[in-house]
Length: 202
Image (cartoon, rainbow, N blue to C red; front, side, top):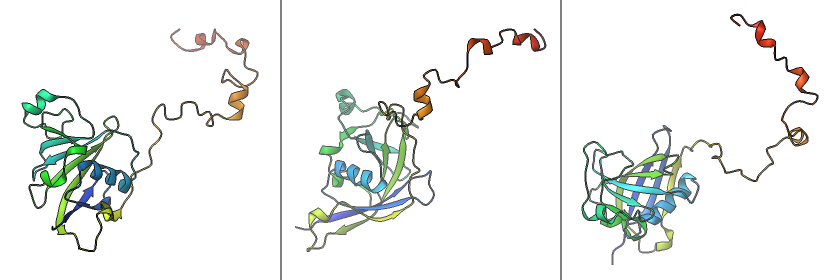
């Protein structure tokens, strides 16, 4: 039985030289593709993400989410709104990555996908199928997925609010010695409540 793999190219608009080429079996699930992207790009695990299957003009046709979003009525009776191709509010037929096989969603030799990562601090990647190739007989399925080309890096981000809760290593020693946060020697007498009289108009 012949085996095939896809070679996808991944772009990130905010960084001009950013590229990733990822090869993955046609019979792999989108969840494997998601994991490969996380590793190849250097993203943090545990964030929500989704793929959108697009037409040649990057208009979204179907959405494949990491977890079941639980909108059964929408799956059976999908609604479409003109111009909502890049909207995070989905009116598209939805599927789950873990049960969605890549080859079932590839309808174009240069199929386009959008990968959206971390909905609270979104990053959007554009993906295009470059080639469909036959897996060599000597190759093992464990050889895939793999990143075969890498260029550019995402900028390092500041920690999100709450990431350092319980970690007081950022406090300077003098801050710990002085609970009120003011310099030593400050007292109420240093504050001249009549100083406002010095400003014109008062």
